[in-house]
Image 1 (spheres, helix red, strand yellow):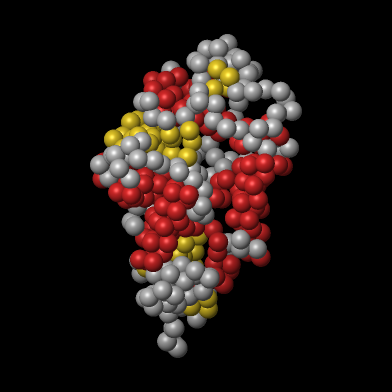
Image 2 (image 1 turned 180 degrees about the vertical axis):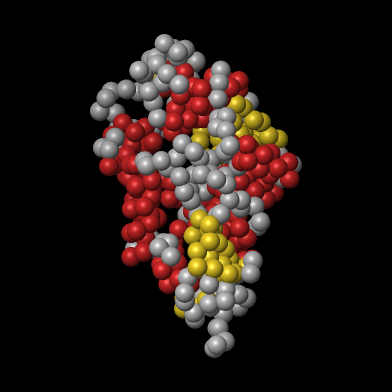
Length: 63
Length: 307
C-alpha cells in the first residue's frame, strides 16, 4: 500500500492488518497523525489492505 | 479478501472517524469537540455578553479551528464581536501561504481581520531583525509576536485575547517550566492579571492536538503548510516527543498532568516570586514587564546587539 505524507510517498508491503501496525512499520507514531482512505478519515484500528492508498496528515510539527 | 467490519460510532452506528474509547462518526465527533469548548467557556466565564474578543490567527490549524468554532458558538452570547489579528513576521517562502489562508478564513467567516507586520512595528522582517542579534529566531519571533498581539489587543480596547493553545501546548509549557525549575515563570502563570495587560483566554485548553486537527480535517479547514524554516531542535520539541511516547502506554497522561498542574497553580496564585520581581510597566513602551524594560524593547533596541 502507498502512504502519502506531505510531499513524500512511502510504500509498505502489508495486507489485511490494522492501520496502527502499518504506521509503526513506517516508523510513524500512530498518535501523531490522522489518516484518510479515499477521502474518508479512518481510526487507527481499521484494517487496511495492500491495494489501499492512504493520506497521512501530520498533526503537528516544528519546534 | 475477508470483508472488513467497519468501526461504528457508539452514538449512532455510522462509520467512525475516531478510534480507541471514543468511536464517533463525523457528526458526533464534531459535536463532542464543540460541546467541550462551549462547556469550558461557560464554566470558566471565558466569554461574556457584549465583549469584543481578539483572536490570534496565525493561519495554522489551531488558530484557524479556534476562529471557526468561536464564530460558530457566538450565538450562545449576546453582542459578542470577534476580531482576528494576524502577525506577519516576514519569513520568506513560509509566511505568505499561512497569511493568505488566514485572510481567506477570516473573510469566509465574515470576521474583521487585522494584519500587523514586524516591518511596520519593529522596522524590518524577522530575517533582518536577526542580523546583529545573537538570539535564536524562535525567541525573538515569539517575544515580538506576543508584543504585537498584546499592543494590538490593548489599542483596540479589547480586554481579551483568545489563543489556540491546546491541552498539549499547556502540558508542554508546564513541563518545560518544571524541567528548567523556572519558579518565576510558574508563579507568573498563576498570578492574577495585573490590569495592565490583556486577559488571555484559551478556549482550546481542554482539547488535545488530535481533536483539533481531526475537527479541522472533517470541517475541510485543515491545510498542510511547510514547516517554518527556522524550526529546529528545541526543549519544547523534546517535551512533545516525551509526552507522545508516554501516551502510548498512558493515554490520559497529558490531561492528568495539565489538570494537576493547574491545581498547583491555583494554590500558589498569590505567592511571591523567588526573584522578588513583580509585574510593572515597561519604562519604554508601558507594556507589562517584570523588570524595568520589557523583553521586546530590549530585543529590538539596536544598541543591544547581543554580539
